Structures are given as C-alpha cells and as structure tokens.
Amino acid sequence: MNFELTKQQVEFRAKVRDFAEKEIKPVAAQNDENEFFDVELTKKMGHEGLLGMCVSPEYGGAGLDTLSYIIAVEEIARVDGSTAATIAASNSLGIGPIKDYGTEEQKRRFLPALCKDKLWGFGLTEEDAGSDSRGTKTTVKIKDGRCIINGTKIFITNSATPMTLGTSVQAVSDVKDGKPEFTAVLVPNDTPGFTQVPMNRKMMWRASNTGKLVFDNVEVSEDLVLGKPGEGSRMMLATLDSGRLSIAAMGLGCAQGAYEMALAYSKQRVQFGKPVCKFQAVAFMLAEMAMQIEAARSLLYKACRMKDAHVPYGMEAAMAKLFCSQTAAKVCDDAVQIMGGHGLLKDFDMERFYRDQRILQIGEGTSEILKLVISRNILN
Image (tube, rainbow, N blue to C red; front, side, top):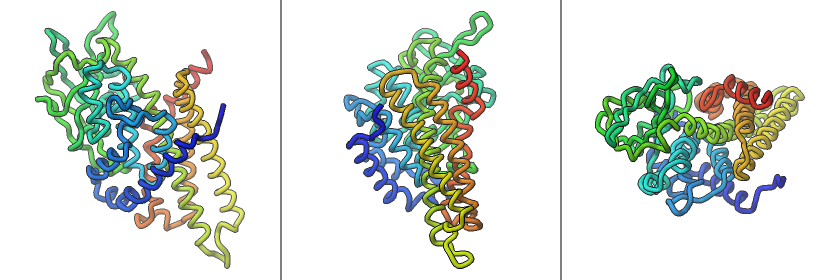
C-alpha cells in the first residue's frame, strides 16, 4: 500500500488549511461564545467546494475520494470543531444516504442544492433510541402513495438552520413477528406539520446547529421513501460507518490543533530561566502527543483507503473513530496541563478545544458501542 498522499491531495490540504486559517479561525471563538451558526461562512465553504465533496460532478459535487474529504475535515477541525461538525455532518450523514441509496429523481432533486448552499439532517436519534437505534418510536404509515410520519428526533446536526433543506428520517413502518421494520423517508423542512427547534446551551460545538425535530401527521409523497420499505435500518447504519471516518477526522484535527498550540506555548513560556519545553516532563508529553497523532492518522487514512478501494472497512472505521477520539481527549488534556491556567481561559483557543473534544467519544457510536463492533468483528 502506498502511504504517500497524491499531489492533488497535498494541494487540496494546503487549500483547505489556507481557507480555515483565513476564514474560519478569525470568527471561531466569537461564534462559539454567541452560539451563532454562521450561514455566510457555511456558504463560503460551499463556494470552495467543501459541500458535496464526494458527490459526482454530474450532481454538482467535487467528485473527490474519501481520503481527500477526510483531509478537509481534519484541517477544519484543526482550527474549529463547530465548523468541522457542520461540514462533516453535511458530507457524510446528510448527503451520504441520498448519494448512496437515492433514486435518480431524488438525487437530481436534492443533491445539486446540497452541494452548493443547503444542508440536510440525519434523523436517527431519539430519547430512547441512541446506541440502540432499533429503539426508534417515530412511525410512518405508507398507504395510497402517501407517507404519514409521527414522532420526535433529537440531537440532529444541521437540521434546524436557515440553510436546511430537509432530513432523512428513520421510522417504524411495520411490526413483523414482534420485531419492528424500519423505513427511511426524505422529509423537506417546509413540509406542514414538521417543526425544527434548535437545541442550545451545549458545552461543545456551540456554533454548530443541533435540532429537535417534531413530526405531527407529516405527510409526504411515497416517492420520498429512501430505498425500499423495510431497508431503513440497514441504510442508516451503513451511513454511520462512513460517518465514523469523519468523526475520527475531527478527533485527529482537534488533536493536531491542540498539540500545535501546546508546542508553541511551551517554547514561549519561561520558568526557572528557560522555556518549559526544555524540561523533560513537558518534552516527553509533547513526544507522546506527536506519536499518538501520527498513529491516529495512519489508522484513519488506512480505513479511508479501504473505503476507496471498495473493500469492507466497518471494523477499521470503528477502530479509527475510537482511537482518534481517545487521542483527542488525551492530547487536549495534556495540552491544558502544559498551558496551565492559560489553557482554561476563553481568551485562548485551547479552552474551546478541550470542550469540543468530549462529544467525539459519544457521537456516531459511543466508545463502548465501537468496542462492541470491533470485538464482534474479531470474534467472528
């Protein structure tokens, strides 16, 4: 396997990093403090081709490979978790199901806008359906060419913004032999009876949009069923495999950004007559950070290359997401230790990174669920 990035991937990384430094970094702290979802910034990212990165140009996308997309998420997360969450959820959870399972009519109806300046939600989580996605209580009745949806979803990224076009919703469509059958339906945000409410006061990703969705006899045409009735759970869980790569990239980028901040600070902070990086205790912490980040990057990039090679990658995606989120947690914790009191002040970006990393061990598969996925793979 060739571990070198292609010339195009190297140039793409440089392009995204330049955009992140010039456009995202200057507003990240203020947006976080104000819990402000930045519509104009998101539109700029669409203009840069960061929405619909893996979608075919036929539908308005950039036609990039998985690794290039993951590099983009990594570079954005290096400066801001909230913005990275917006891009990651848009490209994987939002666009993914339509790109991978949508009919030609559905793709042509939704993908061009989603690749340009619109967002889409992934309606899976409920109060009683988190790690147990089959605990879904939202229902859909399919009859006479119509779908009637009732229920509630929570913690749905990108679902309640002024830019949101709609959400893919998993709902119970039937019960057979005592077991629920799940169907996925594409629900536009302007459908009567469909309400989207932003969820605020979050500890992390404060500038990312999170929504609570309420379906009160929401009626859509049957041609908005994604795939076939009864295939909803399979499609949604397969989408999570891909989505785990993007969360892993967020962990990797977060760790890289925190490490760079701690390294720079350690060279400037003087104690006992010399920079603190000259003390072995701090130097060893930095060495551990660098090693963990490099290991995380290797594991994640391998999983991406497997996906691009069209070979099974579910276990590797789980490993990458688990390890990268753990790396982000450890690196951010050590970075705060190196920066001392300054690492805990809102005047320094490290405080935001320390908060943002915590969700990475929960979203798109908790660490415990990922260990279950990995153990089942190695025991089969």
